[in-house]
Length: 545
Image 1 (cartoon, one colour):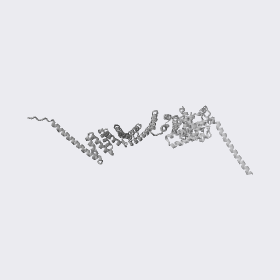
Image 2 (image 1 turned 180 degrees about the vertical axis):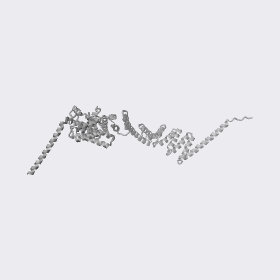
Image 3 (image 1 turned 60 degrees about the vertical axis):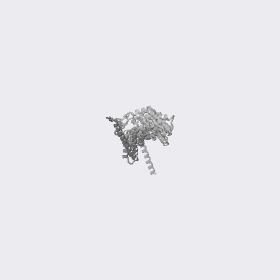
Image 4 (image 1 turned 120 degrees about the vertical axis):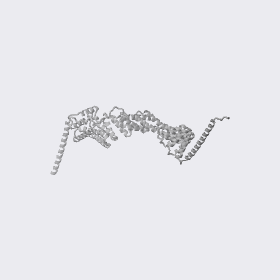
């Protein structure tokens, strides 16, 4: 029994000692809180009205002697380094807090040590706040310029963790709306939209009168768009578009409005009509090119994609009629575009649409040509060139158009097309034959022998190592011969015989040179005989004695 009594007494003594310690600690904490002139509620006020929030903000921003001198010393370090702490709610949102990275890191370390060493003081709430802000500042000022992207991500994660810490540990912090805003902003900038969604819902329900309420409507729209609800996203965006709120990025609002409408268009759900919807997308895209350059490339790509989507939705077929209508719609958009960037984008779209139309005309032209419907073929080739003058295969189109024109006896037009194919597109695989055809049309069809001969002569020089060269030389000699320029004709034949002795035309050329020499000899003989006759006629007759 005595051992039991002793154990009970010892247990009772331990309980009493523990209770005394708890009561003593509680008394010390209460004494510290009471001794601080700025009440704890200044940091834990639930926002009831905008005026009350502003009054509390103004009161909290004033330095008072009752604040912990060690904390005040750290804030003084910040102000001496150029930080404006008068409006701490908006600190760092529009301009850097501290430009000197070494000073920023020094002050960050000071705040961290303060938090670690003074866990019971009310100043740690503002210290935690400044730690998060300075980490964000470090990303914007240093990491994006000088350090690796992975490091930037790590620092951004640290900033987000500090925002989370304040939300979890100090839910009645009087400026919690600022914490939520900065937290959400960091998540959206980092692309963590899904993670930001509950934060957005929490803010909208708890702070309907906050100065950031319009920004969170924008964030809500982003969340809806991310979930695949472009209609809801656009409806919300229209509520904040063109609002004069400096916290709203109008460039972003216009870009995401364009993106929402673009996704609506891609699903085929547009009202009142596709043309009106495309015009709205273009208007939003143009506005998004006037501000923050971060959205420029995305806005241009989005507009370009919308043009293709809308054209395909309006004119789904790939026949001549639909392709022509697409091109016409694209050119109409060209006339409406205001910014240079969008005009250049529409130029690309129109060029692609023109190419599609030209390709269809080319396909139909080739079919008609194979069926010997040369008139229909020529019309298709002509339309292809009209739609897309800078078509990547324009050389082929001019060449085929020239062939079709020659077939329907329009020789002068055929010659012009072959000239284009040969001279304007010398690297085309059809340039060689086009040059030969040009000489042939001039010499054989139009009987412009000298011009035809010159083109054949030029073709033989250009394509000396090609199969067409000996043929071109032969025709050049023939056309010069028909033009009665026997010396040049003989020159072309001789060159053919020397340069291409194994070609079948080489022997023909030798025979023709021999005939030309016979002709020349006969002509000389006739000239000599004519001269003699003339001399004898000019001598006076002798008189008889």
